[in-house]
Length: 442
Image (spheres, one colour):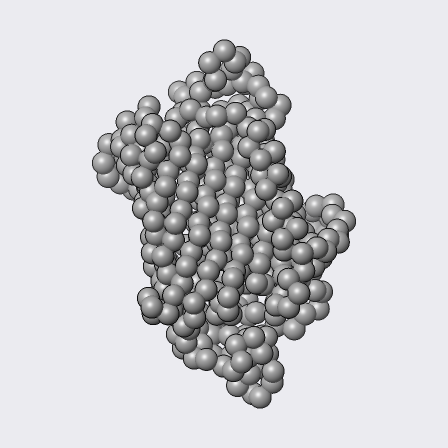
């Protein structure tokens, strides 16, 4: 299950996290890309290669506080103890197939834009092949309905077939929703909100083939996005809005259909909650009128992650996430790079989804994860994210937008190392927002 999305807290303690100084950075998109490449290489050199399981590297001393699996605890153990019985399994379907678990949970929450919402989510985690030779698979299926009549149905998947011979990555969505937009470029305090309604139909599917017996995969993908019933409320009242100015009018629908060439490198020890290893997914996408797109255009997507125990023989982890999302040609306004619109909707803790949007975007996040109990039941995180965005025009990146916060973790499933997460985060507006989820943010 992915996080339900930002739930705005209006009464948090003001000093929950110390303020972070705002940095200013202006340069061309080409210079940014040039700086990002060596930065990514440095991250790659930092983290050692990983094994299929979270086990000590040969020749390396085990973590000082390594705990036997039998000593680990999760939510099922706690509930069982309270009921005076053996551990309660947290999987609704414990063996959908050997090694694969399904977790069914209600989805409840509130968002000022959406109102109260309720639904159900199914989290998928486990191994589709032998654990010794197959990466952990993860996925989620969720549906919800809000008091304002908004509907969301989403399916995301990262499935590794036996021996990692094939990988299937999917992002399928149906959204009948409303969302404020705030123009293009970096966030600015006091910006005006422009409410919009739309229906999104999305089908992104990429299939990868493993290159011999390496950790490298190459693949091809299909990408379909259709925004229908677009209604820009302020434009309808005769005001110029970012959407109408950028689009040269107020189109009621936009459509993008394209194909992609993709590369994937994955040496993580656990795809749900990694302690060591690297992950990089690069995608070059081409949208063509020939396929049914409104315009011919291209985009580049890069998603890099590194995980390193710090200190080396402890169970604390420094996790780093770096993405680049560039567009070339006239992309529809709602298809432009925007915070919170990555596959799992997890970027930009501290900001509402779509709060920052532009023609190009670079995003970096640093999270330090610590264990609070020896039996792995409790943990905590502290995180900082920094994003740079361009507006149409000269292609210059403006002021960096920071987000920061802290979070609590509770072990939900010790077999797949899945955590329940609660995070409190702040962005430029200094409002604390709460994020809830099952599985780590990245």
